[in-house]
Each structure stands twice: as structure tokens, then as C-alpha cells.
Length: 275
Ligand SMILES: [Zn+2]
Image (cartoon, rainbow, N blue to C red):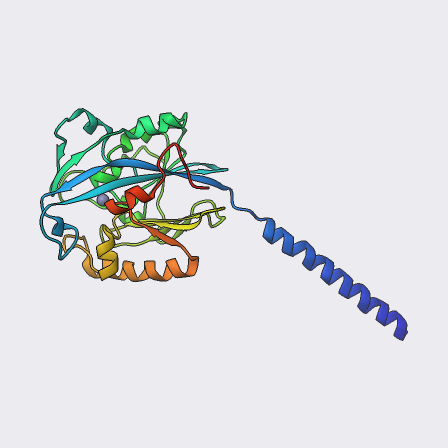
């Protein structure tokens, strides 16, 4: 009897370890479907007064605009759509609230360089609904929008919401893992606008990156922990900065500030990519 129970115990242990060894590689093999990310130039923003976005700065300023395109096994994801492509036909640029918008290269031409049409883009995730981020949204009527609910439902006091009711939309309230594999995760960073979101991307070789939208406009703001007074909700914006510091640490991610001009020379743009 004794030897039989020993045999049973041995069989039990064998089965347990066999099950564990099955389970562990299965987890390790649950590879995310993300393949690569492209950086797209999405315009230039001249500011009459740099301090309108960077508290403490003086004199005129300049911001860049950046969009990102992600290739995932389950579809193409565009994060932000930049200044409108029509601006390329305006030699002096388009006047904005705080200065002037100009464009050297259209978003559509950059997609074309990759052999893509706007209708090939499956998801358009937007950091928020301001003009320098939704300028080309009209090109993507066939895509699925990914916008935080408070942003989607917001009625701006001036102008109209850029979101057309006919467009398919995913409207999470809070963080949202788009494909459920941790590779493309929207991070709620409300405050600059009612439902602002960042994008956390986990690339196979490059590692984790956090793309900012306007949760932080410049490196100076990030370093000083300050936000523009013109933001929709200043205390909420400051809380978003704190949240970002926590997520960056947890995800071991690097921060990429899309409006920061000094980051432009550090990036590889379309057709180059990050994998
Ligand atoms: Zn912006």
C-alpha cells in the first residue's frame, strides 16, 4: 500500500510539473501582435508667446506636431492626425489662436510612402480633440475612432465637436488595452482637455514608449512639473503628470513628447520605423 501511495504521489508530482511546464511556455509564447511603429511629421506651430504653453518661457516659440502609426497583426493604428493637410497649400500658413500653423509634408503623402491609403487605417486613436491633433480626421471616415468618453461627448464652447456621429467609435473611460495584449494601451491623462489620453506602446525590440499628446507640451514643462494655465483643468493636468511618472516607472517606458522640437532630430521618420 505504502509503495502504491508513493507511486500515486510520484505520478501526481509528474502531472503537476508537466502541467506547469505547459502553462509557463504558453504564457511566454503569448507574444503581442505589435510589429513596428512609424513616426510621422504632422506640422509646425509657431507661437507668438512661448509662455502660452511653457510657463516661465519668454519671447516667441515653436512647437512641432507628431503623429504615430503602429502596425499590429490585428490592424493599423494611427495616433493623432496632426494639422490639416490643406495647410500645405497656404504659403504663409494658417493663423491659430496662439500663432501660426505651417505644413511641409502632408499626412496622406507619408501614408502613401508606405503604400497605404487612409482607408487602410483600422483605428484612429486621438489624444484629444484640438485642431492640431484632429486636422485630418476627415480622411479616416472608415476607421474606428478610439477616444475617451469625456472627450467624445464634450461640447466645445467655441466651434463644433470634430466627431461625426456616423463614425464607428470605441469610447473607454480610463485606461484601455486596445488589443488585449498590452502592446497598445491608451492611458487616461485628463486635464489638458476633458478626456485627454496618452498612448503606451510596447515594441518588441525598442521597448516601451509613452506618447504624450498634450498631457505635456515641452520638456521644460516635464522637468519643472508645470502645465499651461490655459488647460481645461489645471489640477487634473498636474495629477495626470504624476500618473504618467508612475506608469513610466511601472512599464519601464521612455517618454516621447510629440510637441517638443528638440526631440525632432532624435527621431527616425517615415519610411524608417521602430520595431
Ligand atoms: Zn497639441
